[in-house]
Image (cartoon, rainbow, N blue to C red; front, side, top):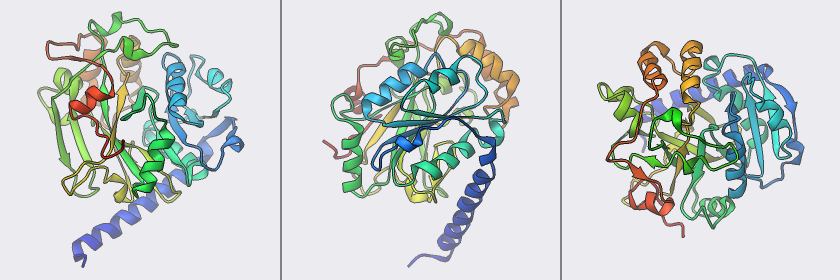
Length: 340
């Protein structure tokens, strides 16, 4: 029998979810359809959702990578890009595009806008919610499509799958790397931190909270609690009653956050190869320091932006060169969790 405090917590979270949905619904008027091809979405299609701004250096490979996995349609919100992003997306036959000039931070960092689209178009579909600098990988992704994975998740009664955001970086200074937008950025952002991660379970939302990696090591060594959160729940069989709480780090209802096995076994998990550290990170950091749209308390992160603008080297003697999903599984950063 559930205890009274547990029932009270569940009641509060149910109303929190309803408030988040109402908040998002109220912002639906901020979105203008630039190219709506959602009538092409089939009943069982796997969908991807993203909010972007000036991402022409990443979008060609982002789309190519996730198309190869089996994503059938991309639903993208563009937040006032001026680098050709919108025109490029409009030309893609499997992409629907909405635009908005409104504040990114005020939309819960784009989550309010995507919640509108997820409720409207994602209901009943397996949905990947990503940033443009994230490349989703999982066990056997090089030979088995995403559909095989989601079919297995359905058969095993799982509605969601978690992933670790793995910061990738080059061997030398960030600004000296060269990446063609048509090429795989991981060929240049070839290294990652393999072992400096700390994980705790958040008691209220029951999600995992992972911190560490090169950003914690290089920028937040004096106060690692301020380091970015690396745990996400990007893949969910969506229902219009669901809502993300903080980016894709957690969701409601909270059973969606149970992307780990508490009984001694392993749950399947993926990895988001994070391509944040392309050469344009220097100019982007200058812009974002001025815009103050990417953190709840942007003043606390001024030192972080200053460090990025200085063109640092994240590589160190302990860095590991990326060699595929089998390597990540061996390091404990990814799990097949029984899926073969």
